[in-house]
Amino acid sequence: MPKTSQKRYVLDTHRLRDPEQTLEIVKPLLHEMGITRIANLTGLDRIGLPTVMVARPNSRSVAVSLGKGLSLSAAQASGVMEAIESWHAERIQLPQRLARYIELAAEDWVVDATRLPRVTGGRFDPHGNLLWVQGRDLGSARTCWVPLEMVDTDYTHAPVGGQAAFPRTTNGLASGNNESEASCHAICELIERDATTLWHHQPAATRLDPDSVDDKRCRQAMSMITEAGLEMGLWNTTSDIGIASFRCVICEGGAQPGHIGIGDGCHPDRAIALLRAVTEAAQTRLTYISGARDDLDPSEFTDQAKTDRARYVRDLIDGAAPRQKFADCPSALTSSFDEDLELLLDRLAATGMSQVVTVDLSRPGFDIAVVRAVIPGLEAPHDDPDYVPGPRAQRVMEGFA
Image (cartoon, rainbow, N blue to C red; front, top):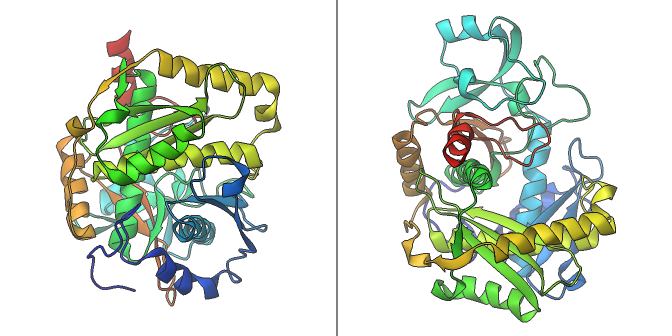
């Protein structure tokens, strides 16, 4: 595993290795992890942004992962790494401990469970036994215990030793070429989901002016969407944390029926953040077109559902004037993941999120890293079916009322 944290690939994302090198390293692992197919979905849509599906039939969570990028190899690496990180989270091999929160917190370092997201119908009991898994608090560099049910992704059964009080999702699960790279991606995902949730509760009245975007890569991806006859809306969803975050929506032009696309992206470099949102929107549209994901409900493919989604996106675009400037969005360019990590921790601490915990799920002998990040105080994704608004979302809703 690379000892340095210097970035060597910075085209459509930031990585320590280029996609071809990553694919070469993980190729021998695919059979062991149950990955049976990497399929190119790009030609099923007319946009042309590379998108792939990765099949893992015996998955204990979602059997199909998606990947995207500006090249086919980048999309393949993206999809394969998503499948690999899920495999790791289904098979946790870290120290675990059965304890009551009130007792564990008195004798050891533990995540602030009182600030973790809640779920509908769930109730956290600090006096009840709960299974905890060992992580690390990045701020203090100390061992820190995290509820196992927030890390484990084996959804074939109820959480072992859990209280069903916290979300069981892949939010904050990420992989990379070393631990610092994976940690940055995991933390950015948590910041992105929090920012998107806050934006959802109070959508901006203005959207991003696409003509103000001066990054060639972003302009290329955006042009591929508009030249395909699709309409696009962009929003700067950056929260008070100050790490660039964007939302992109696409739909057929005019009142034509058809599948939509919605994507979000977050990164210290605003160009990478926007590019992630744009390519994810194209990926989401292809996900609907292909029907590849096994977690899509058949009801989402009815004519009425497609009409409702198209109307939602159309109303979003029509209801916001493109007045935001890309240059007004925060951006930080660094040459290493250690610098990115320091920036992310500083920005989170400045907004009251001083505890950032990562659970290292990496396996010895595999030249890749997989981590799950947990940040007490951040909002969970608003589109999860059991989502319960936390304090940050409640403040936004109160201010909007």
